[in-house]
Image 1 (cartoon, helix red, strand yellow):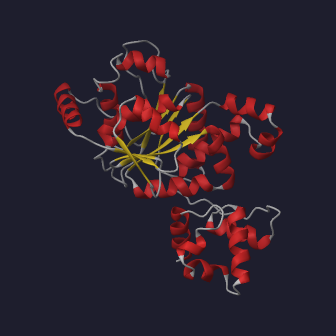
Image 2 (tube, helix red, strand yellow; image 1 turned 90 degrees about the vertical axis):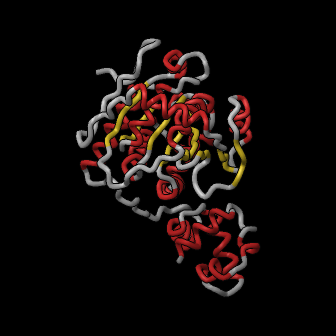
Image 3 (tube, one colour; image 1 turned 120 degrees about the vertical axis):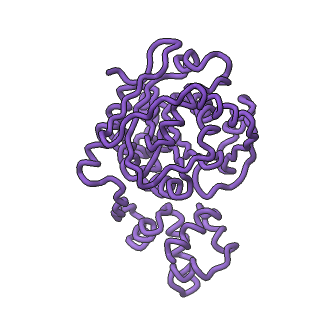
Length: 334
């Protein structure tokens, strides 16, 4: 069966792939109408993380989405109980190689009941950029198969929904349609999870959702209903990419890696063993680890003691140390 949809006016054909749970039953018209009236009558404010680029707030302005900017402990875009970590493909690959994405998604999955990973961009764009730049080749060392393996690892370890679109605008429009239906949702943590693959691109989705800027919300409500029943959605602009990612994820699940914490392997960075150990243990950048070690040595104290006892103002001057990172690092040390 072909996943997703292909024609205008046709509802999505989605198949639950995990045999533990069946696809969610389509809500009745009366139930949907009541839910849509409730969403429309509720005034909600989105939160955009203060470290997000101005492009996000510009998109929210374009789509007339009410928002405020604040520092989030995890995630980049939030509405009630639903939150999304936004990554371009370039950023996702880089943060996967450094291990940063695992920390971000772990915090997100613990803090919110409906976590999303929002990916934008295509593997072809990364491949073209690497061919054009020696620096990109050295930094990313990328091939599309590795990228899908990285996505599968994240899906396997954390209870995530994924939206992968070609552009930020496409991703924001999907979140705009879905999140109002999910902002009060609490998904049961012990509920058996199934995975539904949705495949489609925004031109097709605009035809499905109507040209009235999604005001009817019918499709969004049906997809949100699946999530509320414990089904994770993996929404990818290209069906073959989604199937390949799911295949890799189920292989990892069969290997017993579902929900397993990531192993912290100390990788040599050329900065010295102490720096590598601290970087791996605290899950921070090498430059920050090196700076902390240098300052602790200057004060003749252990680096862990220095982090715990030094005033925030002294620690925040180190490159790469922000309020969120400082809070996380101190929690790790205990």
